Image 1 (spheres, rainbow, N blue to C red):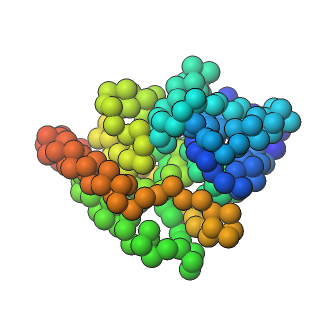
Image 2 (cartoon, rainbow, N blue to C red):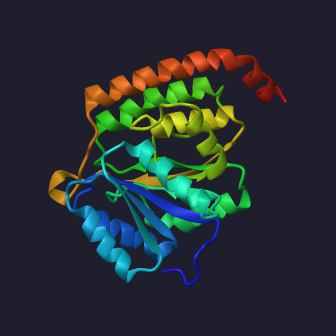
Length: 252
């Protein structure tokens, strides 16, 4: 664990029934950064109790337990709201199931500290075992996100390993009732671009674990793609309204 805890940047891990890799994921994050906060989003798999026991051993870990499942975006909003109240300015979000590279946390935090007005976005580098449906399917969402922002530079709209400036993200989320579930990651980057928060992309590996390796996926193809379709429909309408302003920003 780092010898000195940051007072501006924290690691924020939303977690819902994450499977057996959650404790290793949190320990890996703690080895790179302090503090680490986990928001348990109504999990029913006993992981809340395991994480609370780990927090008793690790002073850099805080566990927030929500009474029911609200969705990833809602869990992030709860975490950043409490973080802002505690004086933090930035949050690095990462998944709880071991897919994201904890060893890159310091590099992402350093980039954010150099450019605090930017959002630092992980650009996924897939291994050979990555499901082709997931890899190719995200290209559609990325294409829409780049159109909706006039190609401001979003390397990947869906990869959740990223550093957010807390205040503009909170402002955006409080202004609309969406971004509470699987639609959180892509809608957050599009709306932050609209708000003038520039993206900085850094390559980062992603690992999809098989079930026999302890991997857990809550992705549901029909449900979540329907949600993404509705999200991009409303974002495109918002893009049309904002188009003159976006053109001016791109020119100047």
